[in-house]
Length: 161
Length: 162
Image (tube, rainbow over the protein chains, first blue to last red):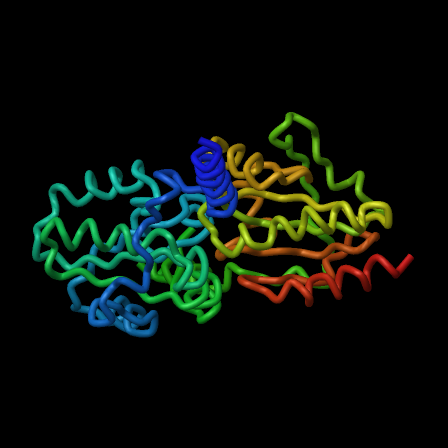
């Protein structure tokens, strides 16, 4: 009985410590969103590449969706991009799902975030996964190494506010 | 027609101008905000203090690593004039309240927005931390994951200067 009490207490303590250490998430603290690094490299697009695409006339423009922070979107975003996030929260994924409902599955879509370093981004992985699983076949994700400020704005690429 | 072309050119140029502008060696923009407890934060009342102003968000993993250290510094350096202020760039205060409680953050935290972000040069990536000297001048800016030792060293230099 004493052993059982110790074990139960130990498990409860471990759970409590785990909850204190893990980042606060919208969903269960034991189910973090897919990391950005889970996105296949073949689906990544470099900022220079997207800028060239947007600058050239005659190219079909992709549907550009920012799936990160609304506050950051409002400060600066890629021209003609729409806000459809955050990918790390259920309400953000719902917004994204609703936005792409009328969009053809073969449409050219580019997702981006830029909230923080790529390996730490909690938004693009989940957004990509959802659209990929929904059957979108021409889906790219803008690779932002550090953040939108450093990797897009400060490179002199076009910005809308 | 020419006027329309000129206007387009002006708009294109302005849209290509850098939004993220450094504030180092410039006066820190003044703001007044209510923190999560309803207490007023007025930066005009912080002259004579060294301020660590940290922009963060609950979804920013590097931010979660830094903030307990900021709490520790507030306690350790508070008697020497340090004031730590957190500005959350979340869209919703609910997860912020939870995070502050879970992380036991005991310095003032207020909600930020795009307007405040723009005044601080454009908060286009997190975390973003400013060190402001006792005269209200921004002396350092730390963007992204940063060696906390560097921030502390800069902080101690500012604290020693009075």
